Length: 266
Image 1 (cartoon, helix red, strand yellow):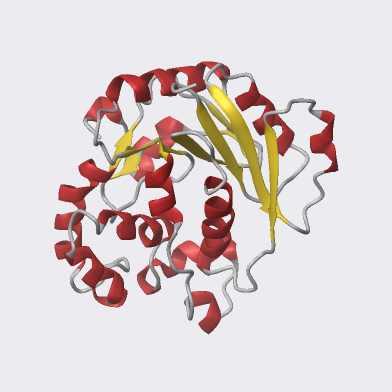
Image 2 (image 1 turned 120 degrees about the horizontal axis):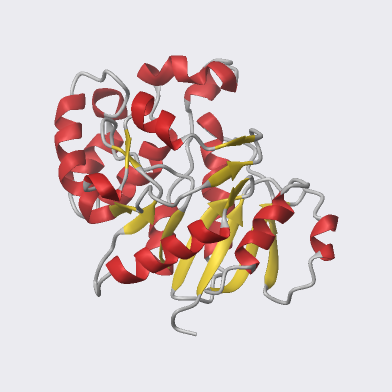
């Protein structure tokens, strides 16, 4: 079973989440599927999938969701990952379905690229123009490293504790808070560059968009990200975003949001 992996499907359980579960059960390299959601979620439909590899983990939702729901992502991720029994764990979301071909290609690339002692976590793209910012749709790596990634303090006194901001316009406030991916991944990167801890402690100086010392933080981001995260190739990837009822637009992300993949050295 050494080549097998656990997948943790994290986030609120919706009716369409069964599609995510089934997609991974079809993958030949999956040892178990852990559904990590909330006590309040209705998961009755999950029982319609008869497979002993499914494990259900329900957790009490944090009273403070954090800016952009980051605390919810952290809690439901770590609670699922800690229950993985595989050396390799894949953390994904409960509203995104990859094709069978995409999953096989990612598994093959991971096994061909990962080397002994490698602390990199594999992701589906990296935003090189931002700070410590991989695409957070999928995190694929050794279980111990994913625990390191998500076993972090929850946000307190964040943006949403100070003002009321609808999630639909949250992007307009990037100069006033740390992006969620940066909040999580900068802490992981700090194991390779201790100075990043200083940035985490003084985010308004280093980690907000347009911070006065953003360029210094970005210099270390460019140097340390290749040690921490590795993108899968874009070629062959296809994902349907059930939560938004649309195919994920890879070309749009490259053109408008500077998302890069393995083909470009990321």
